[in-house]
Every structure is written in structure tokens, then in C-alpha cells.
Length: 301
Image (cartoon, rainbow, N blue to C red; front, side, top):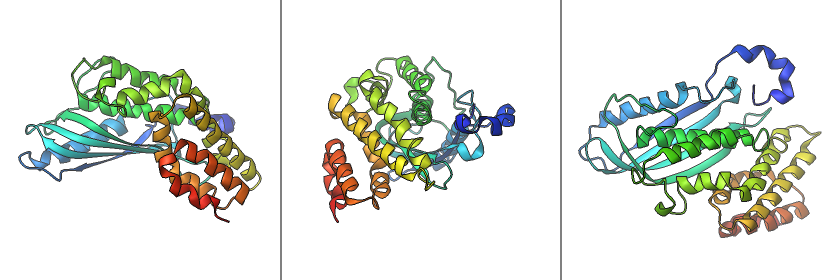
């Protein structure tokens, strides 16, 4: 089914036979400290990763071109352990299109600081669900499934479970000690905690809020008839996130959300009446207190 099929099922029925990949990825590899490795390895890696992400069918659903998720992968090489082994920082950013607009809304913007991988020029990237082939493909596939889970949650409440469980299965398949970033002992903002938060029953209220924020909010903002209700739904979703944050203080998921949505929220409510803006300010300083100064503009007449 299409992600918007509940709105346009009859209109788009004939597209059901199409097969279109879900992700449009752009890979950037930065090598500021390159010393011994052949730069051609990273050109090969860029091409291999884009092909791996873009050409693989990750779901059973059909995505129209305008529905595809945009995914940016930025790998910054921090250390050359050998000519084919590297320690890096991995930035993952993904956005989904907002209905009836040219705007894309960020789903996740996350920095993974513990990314170790091996890669040789022209190496074929192999990944099989349920097994661990390499930290490179397991990590990238993990984030693809997290992104798909987040995306599906925005179209139907908790409908991302199937993909979040796939991400959990990837984590479970990593042999103990095989690589950093997969264990609770590796830090409090890593792959383990991201999927733990997403699947934790205490955070279901926040995941349900993603549907209200996006489908019932952002996707309806372009219509004058539904704009007021859309803004109300977005405010309700932020209230639900505040409540989830109170039940699971300092969760990684909430912090990932506000880091991804801060500017968007400020822009959405920038022209609301002062009473509404002050309510949004009160909500956001409870879940994003370290950036309270950014929200101060909402309180100004």
C-alpha cells in the first residue's frame, strides 16, 4: 500500500503493481585526517553505500517518487586504523515530504560517534537479515529501518513497529564486543538506547504523537480550512511528548526529536497569537530546557 493510501486509495489503486525503492540517499565522506589510505577507497565506498541504500527494497510497499524519504549519510573519518579499517563519526539525517507542499520535514538528525568499519575498494556490501556480516552494513541497515519506523509512525499510529523490530534484530545479531555503539555500556546516546527508547512502552505516547504531529498537523497546514485544527493537533502532540518525557526523563528519543524539530516548531508557531506562542514556549522549555533561549522569541508580543 502507499503511505497516503488511506486518503487516495481509489485514485492510486492502479499504482499497486509498481516497484519503487523507498529511500533516496546521498552519501558524503569527509577525510580531514587522511594519511595512508588510498582516497579511491572512499569514492568506491560512497558509490557502494548509495547503491546499497537506494537499490535495495526495504519494505513490501510501493512508494511513489514524491513519497520517497530523503536520507543523508555523512561519514567523517577520524582515524585510519589500517588502510582498510577506520574509526569515524556517522551523521544520519532523514526527512519525509509534507503533503501538498514542497517542504520536507526532518524525521531524524543524529550523530553516531562510535562508528568503526572495514572497507576495501570495490568491496561488495553484503547484508542478510538475522546475521552479522559487517559493522558497516549492519549499522547502515539499522538506521534505514529506524528511519522507516519513524516514517511509518507518522502515517498511522505505531505502524513503524515492523521496521523498528528489524532494527532491534540487527542489534541482537551483533556478536558481543564486535563493535562499539551496540551496547548499553557504550554510552547513553548510541544505537542501543535509540531502539530501546523507540520500543519502550513508556514512549508509546510519544510515538503516537508523531502521527498527530505529522499527518494530522503538518500534512494539513497548507489548507486554509484545516490550518487552525492542524496547529491545534501539533500543539496536542507536543503536550503528549512533554508527558512522555516526564515519564522517561532525559530519554534519547525526546532529545533526538527536539534536535530535529526545534527550528520547525519555531517556524510553525511564529505567526500564531501570543497566547498560543506562550503555551508552546511553556511546553518546549520542559522538553528542551537547554535551548530555552531559542524559544524566548515565542513570548515576545
